Image (cartoon, rainbow, N blue to C red; front, side, top):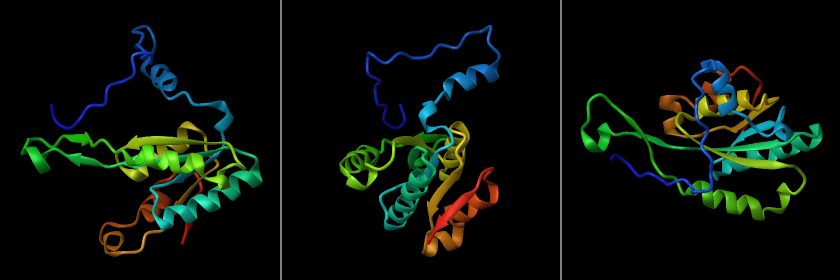
Length: 174
């Protein structure tokens, strides 16, 4: 077994695929979301100063439009070839307990009392996951903070990549 597995609670019901249903319908039921957050504002949040500024802007945006706020934390995925020497590369979701910590911090934050919000955890490429959550919730906009640093200059910033490929408006907060 590569990586760690987090067991699901026993009372959580897993959806079972119906062989008579088309794959598209099965995917739509898998990604069902709370209708209260339809056409909400998606914001990428990792606890950094840049993401805190983006969160503050997204709160104001959601409050002004009367919509919900979908806060997304994307956990990192690591190729197993880095530590196991496997061929071909396989990606493993690394357990990220930061989502739990961020969730507790956000739950105690008074500035979030103005809007309805949820915290969504995903694993994978940040740009892809933010756009995917935006699609699932039919979000009106995606808000991200800008990155300043060497890594962003070499690999391209998340904000820049997202703005080039997103299917909905992207707001980049400096």
